[in-house]
Length: 111
Image (cartoon, rainbow, N blue to C red; front, side, top):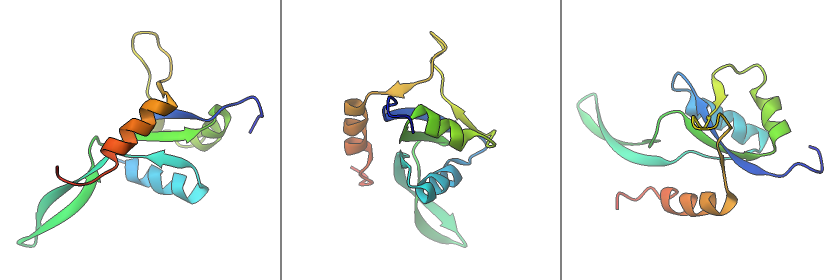
């Protein structure tokens, strides 16, 4: 990591429903990340099961530096930056906004 680089929250897409796979990879590497989750009720073998699932499929927020994220992305074609269509730049969420978002979306209570 370069000393001039700062940690930022990058909004990323993991295509083909691989968001949880990317989360596991990031967790193993010790990279802070966040996927908003919620509980859903599913029927399986005639029984109701409560499962924790992503609120928005394949969206992963990653807190790291640009160079570290680039190293992680290398060789993973289904892990992509989310881009702002207005200006073509990567979506970076300010730390304070992300802290508030995690405080609200990080609780799995149905309320």
